[in-house]
Image (tube, rainbow, N blue to C red):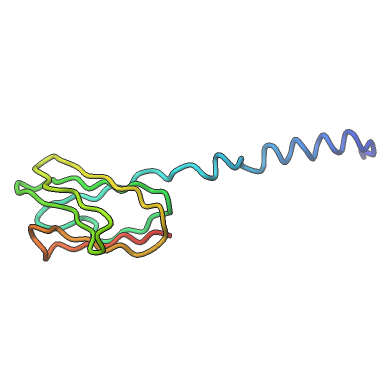
Length: 112
């Protein structure tokens, strides 16, 4: 059994260094999330992400679409086939969006 206080302190410090993630690691941005625009729908229509996550929409339809938040927070402009738009969500909340060209196309981003 170890009774040397210096050895015990060194072991405890080594444990903390390896067991506790650094503050820089915990504050890194979340991996991006993707939403496809196809068949006049957003797929998936709703996703849940963590604060700091970037969401990318990609138009896979043969028609142009937009990604426009209903509260005016973001707006993509026209996206032709193959075009994409990204937005980074910095605050928790529920964000509803639509295609301004085809307003029946609706989606939701839940940010935790």
